[in-house]
Amino acid sequence: MSFLQAALLLRLERRRKLAAYRRARAEAEAMSDSDLADMGLRRYQLGHVARLRALRG
Image (tube, rainbow, N blue to C red; front, side):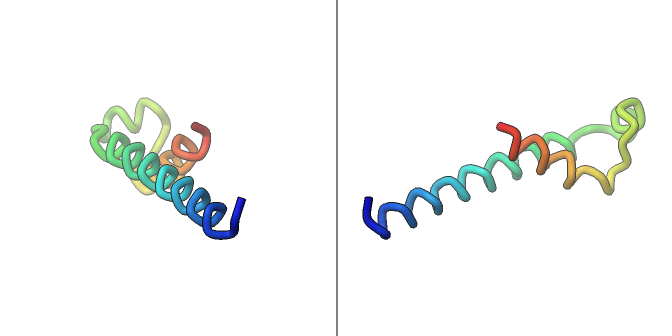
């Protein structure tokens, strides 16, 4: 595998992770405050939740 191929694979993987993060963040942002309270979360914690969901998958 050449350097360019490896760089392309890394870039595609990063793009996939970023897209997954954005999807997870959008889903979390759509939750109501009462849903977040039921889960024991506050709105400022949504970035952390989105990162966990995106990087786990």
